[in-house]
Image (cartoon, rainbow, N blue to C red; front, side, top):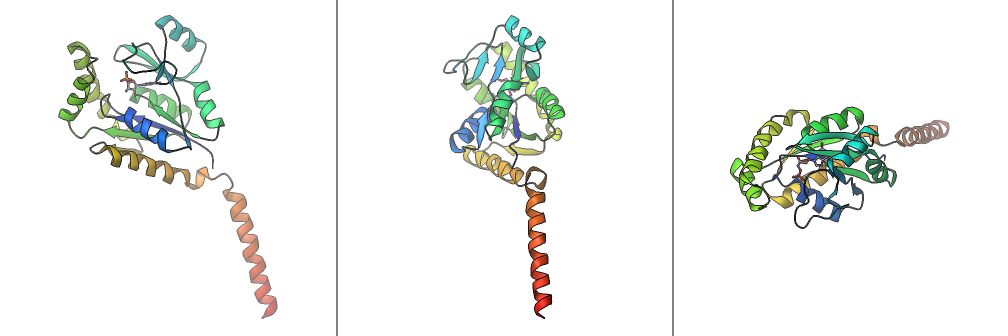
Length: 215
Ligand code: 5GP
């Protein structure tokens, strides 16, 4: 089976980063594409693991050199997916999990149509606000910006293949895992399918001939 890209999108605060971390901990068949961003590093985040934290100049230089499979300006900061990160994960035989906003997801899926698009919804507006304020990293202006963007992002849910409501974290992780399992047995993704079916048909023909000769 060919490994494929899996995009998780959601308004920030909906819990997609936690879902992505849990999936990566539990599944050896998944790898993570570490994005680049120009936003400031939050407490607890590790450069090169959570993001590659770049200056605006460095980001623009990478972008102009064609290093990004997609990029977007989100909440006034740049975010982008490095082609080499996606290739690193896929060529290791693992599905490539990405945490990308709706604009980036659209760009990426246009370039890589085999991508699976999953949207994570928060259970309510109140829950989203609570998660965003709980982070403690947002001043009021930035909080309002994120909430306004959340409205616009949720309106794009119809472009996604799957929707998962994150009302219960374990259930949400389980649902995304089931989506990946089901997608990996889609007939288009099983690259040995033709050979397998050809061999089965040849075996059945032999059995039919054998029975006919015997009878
Ligand atoms: P945060 O700053 O909360 O980590 O992420 C803010 C938003 O940027 C989220 O919606 C997240 O999905 C998005 N994002 C993170 N990495 C990328 C990326 O590589 N490309 C794009 N287009 N969006 C990203």
